[in-house]
Image 1: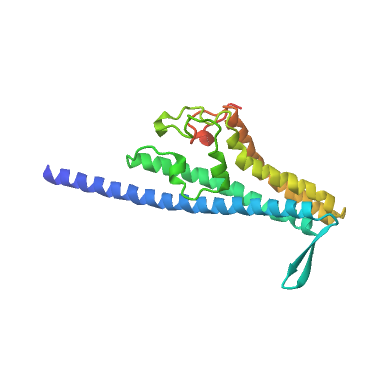
Image 2: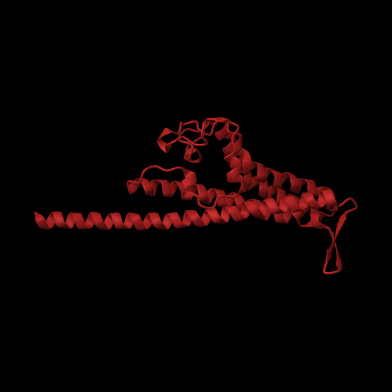
Length: 234
């Protein structure tokens, strides 16, 4: 009997150790994806700022830059805009999809270890500009988040405008890509290039935008951290 109890305790200890190692692996993956997502957010924001800043400053189709006494004329920037925005948009959408999956895995692994439930933001150590903008509030007394994750209401994300920050960035890239048609020639090569970029953005980024709209309208069930994984009523 003592041998059986000892064996049971050993197996339970090994199982707990395996779960802990699994949690650590998932946590490292979560942090890596958080960093990658921040890089793509920053990259996409930089490209948009560069393009529209250049567009506002250039009244005659180009901008002159002085570097060490050498004059450099920047022209034709719009030619590469569709490709640059498409790469950044698709990478951002993909990182968001993997990030949410990793969060779900991390949440489940934490529950298996018996850890107390935590907020999404407490695990995310690489917040970007959009994350901090989402934390803004006009309310004086109401905190950004409840005191405990267990106090989060089911419809926590309903009617929250901040949920559109990431989709807004992606939609801005899509509209900017579409706007670049005015600066491209009407040759079949450039038109194929433009509409191929637009099609890729529409196909792979539209699901993310639709899910966020469904979340905003309260068409998802479940807690605010698990909305994306529940079947929509739509």
